[in-house]
Length: 172
Image 1 (spheres, helix red, strand yellow):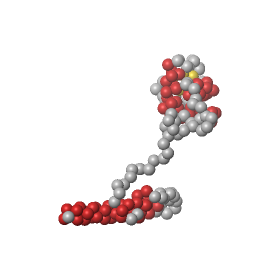
Image 2: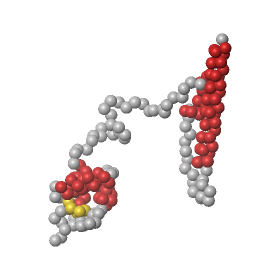
Image 3: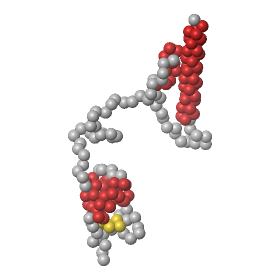
Image 4: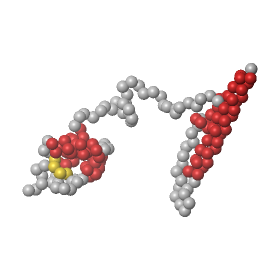
């Protein structure tokens, strides 16, 4: 009898402790949100970014009755599960297909050919591809394509510079 009463009392104390912790955490997070929403001192002219408040989550658990607060806290909420075989990250729109292998190298080669005999930096190549083809390519992909073109002896790096040109259009 004494043990069950002691266990019940310990469970109640634990539930109250969890509820108090959740309430304190929610109050601290609210203070952080309020502070983050205010402009920095001396920056009255700059507009503070607007942030959306989360609905539900831990704050809702803190406002729930003690019986719900004593339940173990769940993990992060996740979105709907991906379909099997669906690509990770950003998905494609309906009807869009993956570009063929070597497309980046072809686009880089076209840009170098159009600019010949002038040498271009990767940033200029990227902006030209974006302008002409409407595709944003990562700099690492451009560097990889330039390496492929260099192996095929189609493009070359100009001396020690970071510029590239189509091979054979040096004006020598």
